[in-house]
Image (cartoon, rainbow, N blue to C red; front, side, top):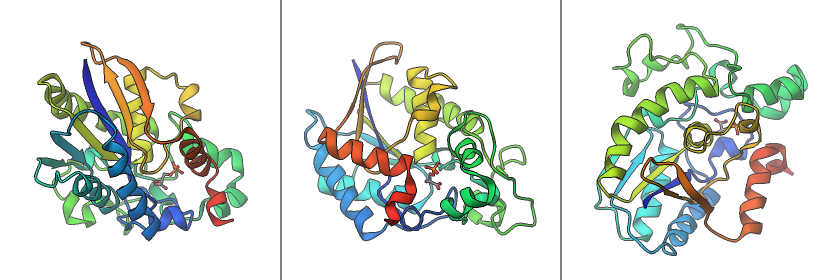
Length: 249
Ligand code: 3PG
């Protein structure tokens, strides 16, 4: 039986402010740091050690991974970073407050932007400060790879090849893999792993810093999926992601 653990980063500054974040490289809040440390402790409940870890090139995920590894005295293991595990690029929505955006465009439209399978957000143009090549970490992306604003479908189109080419061979070699990424890059991965329909993916919300443990069969089909931690705490955190305005209450 193969195993893999997925974790979304802890609360970020823009989660706290309820702003669309995407590729904006915001830091963890103090609460996010505590969540990441807690995720590290939760991982001690699983009966094996992580051999290799994957994350994005965004500091909220990288730092979350480091806290998790530190708690487990595993900072020495190999870590691979790729933009392909980044949050979906939220286009021209990046920086906007989600509640104010819902007032302006309607809650239904914002729901489509946030959770639908193939509705992309408002796009940026190449003269926008948020255009990825303006940041040197994205200097080697091809023109076709540069996102201007991604739907979940677009996100899957870059997460899945990375999963298949880089992560699956490690899992098949028997390595215990940890992936620390983002709400929507993980939704992308989980949609494919669990074969979730375009309709049902709308209801999948990923809580911050809760380890998600998968056991997979020989074809990497999930035998089970388990959120670590008390079910009440996990549900509370899922509710915050589903209704982010609650964070501000
Ligand atoms: C963001 O990029 O704003 C968040 O990380 C994910 O946001 P969402 O839950 O609104 O998709």
